[in-house]
Image (cartoon, rainbow, N blue to C red):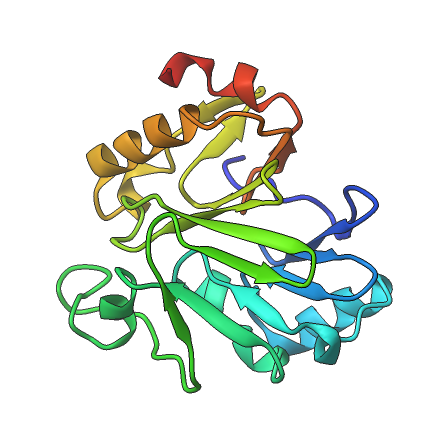
Length: 214
């Protein structure tokens, strides 16, 4: 099966995976702050899954979008107090300047304020450091995030199979060749202890998983 998201639950002391349908989004919290990577979709399901983790959506203060596809961005309304971040190259996808498919199908707009991020930009939320890494290919503005220099969130830039990194399915990508360049870019990162994907789980052996791309 291509989609094999994690069940909702704890990954580490500070990190939880939330499963909504065929996708995961992630919640990271320390003693003071709670942030999300992506939002999932279907509000009722999001609220239900978060409740099993004893997480109140109102406690999420910052939400970092890997891209604007519905399964990643459709749940933004669940996090009304969160400040939303999006790649500057992805904005064209939510303003109908760039179609998602066939020149006719567009991603939905984001009906609230959002902050645009550029490659290599760093945001600090309390003691949490979030480094933005442009990884286009799945969409023009797909972005990965490196948290505290060692936890990598890749959205749909990579998928994992038998602890090996592969590109996402070609028919779902807007530019698979560009995505492969983005994977090679991620392969140059050092000190990554964990990499989390949106649809195929995570690895704690990232260097080994991505070795073929170096």
